[in-house]
Amino acid sequence: MVKNYIFLGPPGVGKGTLASLIQEEKNIKHISTGEIFRNEMKKKTKLGLEVKAIIESGDYVPDNITNEIVKNVLNSDEVKKRGFILDGYPRTVNQAEFLKENKINLDGVILLDASDKVIMERLLGRGLGRADDDPKIISTRLDVYNKKTKPLINFYKAENLLVTINAEGTIEENYNRLIEAIN
Ligand code: AMP
Image (cartoon, rainbow, N blue to C red; front, top):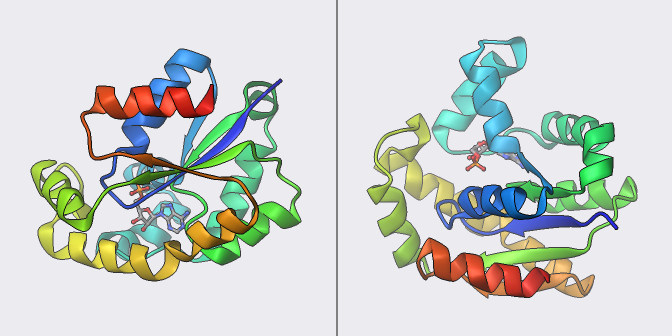
C-alpha cells in the first residue's frame, strides 16, 4: 500500500531534511514545492522569472500557480507508485481544499512543531544559502506562516489527520519521533 503524507510546520523546522531522510528509508517520493520553484528560478524559465520577486520578498506564490504544479506532479506514475511526502504544500486553506476537491488520499498530516524562538535561531544559523534566508525576509516568512498556514492545523484536526511531533530536538531525535509516528 502506498502512503501519502503532508509535512506541515514553520520555515526552518526541518521539513525538507526529514522528508529526504524518510524518502531514503521508505522510498516515498519527497516533493518540495519550494525546491521546484528554486529550480525554475535557477533555470530562468518563464515560471521561475514570474515567481522570483514574490519568493524573495518572503510571501507565497499565488495558489492557482502552485496548485497547478502540484496537480501535475501528483498525477505522475512515479508518485502514484511510490506515494508522496508533500513538504511545504499545502500552505493555505485554499490549497488544502484543492487537494480535497481532487480527491487526493492522505494517510497523515505531520505537524513538525517548534517555538518561534527555536525557529529564528535555526534560520539565522542556516546562513545565507538562499536569498529568502536574509534576516529581514525571515521575519516576513514567519508572519506569513502564522497568518496563512497556521489555520491548516485546525483544518486537518477536523479531518482527523493531524499528528503533532516535537521538532525542537536534533535531526536524529526528530527523525526517530517521526518514524515512530508513521510506522
Ligand atoms: P520552502 O522551500 O518550502 O521554504 O519554500 C520557499 C518559498 O517558496 C516560500 O517562502 C514561498 O514563497 C514559495 N512556496 C513554496 N511552497 C509554496 C506553497 N505551497 N504555496 C505558496 N508558495 C510556496
